[in-house]
Image (cartoon, rainbow, N blue to C red; front, side, top):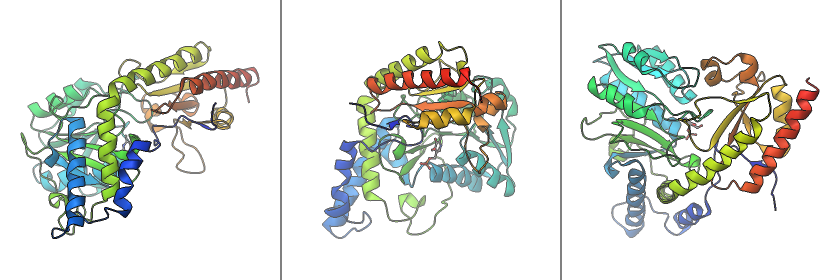
Length: 386
Ligand SMILES: Cc1ncc(COP(=O)(O)O)c(C=O)c1O
C-alpha cells in the first residue's frame, strides 16, 4: 500500500532510521549525564557513549577517533574548517580556492573571509558540473593556504575528483577541505586514500537526527591546526566548546555504523531505482539529465523539463510527491539554482529542473507511481504549455 505524500527529497533531509532512534532514546531519560562530569557514573556512561560514536564516525571515513570533532551539523563544521584555518594560516597566505557550485555554507563563509582580508577564487565548472583540474592547478598561487571543494553536489549529486584534488593539494603543501555532507554514507569515503585534511558531515543526511554533525581534522601528515570558533569550556580538544549533544552524537554514531554495514547493498538497490526512473522519464522528448551521469551519487536525479512551466510542474508533482526544484527559493521570487547556472544551463532550463532524491525507505512501488505520475503531468503540460 502506498502512503502519501511520497518522500523523494532525501538530499534535503532523511527520516531518522528506527534503529538510530532506539539507540538514542535512553540518552534523553535514563543516561542523561554530561560527558564532562568526571566524578560519577552518569558522566562516565555519557563519555563512553561519545567514545563509541567517535569510533563509529571515524570508521566510516577511515579516520582516527581523535580526529573527529562533534558539531551542530555541516554548516558549523564548514565554518569551523574555513574560518579556523584562515585564522591560523592566514598569516602565511591569504588565498583560498573553492568552486562556484558549492553549498551556501561554503560560499557564504568564503564571502565572510573576504571581508576579513582573504582572497577567494571561485572556480568555474564544466557543463557536467565537475571542475577542470588544469584550471585548479593554474589557480594555485604561492599564498594559497586552502582548497575547499565539495565531494558530492547537493543538487545534482555530481562527484568532484577528490583523490586527484587531494594529490594536487598535498604536492604543494596546501590544506584540502571537502564538504562531504552528501557523499558520506552513500559512497565510500576515505580520508587517507584521498589525502583529505578536513571533511565535514551531517547526521540528518544519513538517517540520523538534525542538529548534529562532525568535522574530521587530520592529526598527522600534516597536523592541522584550527582556531576554535566557539570558545568556552574547552570541549572537543578545545576546538568546539559547549556541552556535548549526547543523544544526537549517539544517533550520528549509529547512523554511521549502519551506513558502514549497508552502504554497498543500499547503493546498488537505490541506484537501480534511480536508473529506472531516468530510463523511463528520458523517453519523453523534453526531459534530460543535468550533470555528469557517470560520476554521480546513486540516489539523485536532477532532471530538466524543457518547454513547460517549472512552477506549474512542481506544484502538480508536489500534490502527491515531495520533491524540490533545483532552485533555492531565498525570496518570494524563486531564483534559478546557482549550481545549474554555473553549469551553463540557460535560466529557462535551470528554473525547470527538479531534483529527485531517493533514499533508504524508497520502494519500487513508490518509484513506479512517480514514473507514471510525472509522465502524465509532463504530457499534460507539454500538450497545453502555460
Ligand atoms: C553539501 C551540503 N553542505 C552543507 C550542508 C549543511 O548541512 P547542515 O544542515 O547539517 O548544516 C548541506 C545541507 O543541506 C549540504 O547538502
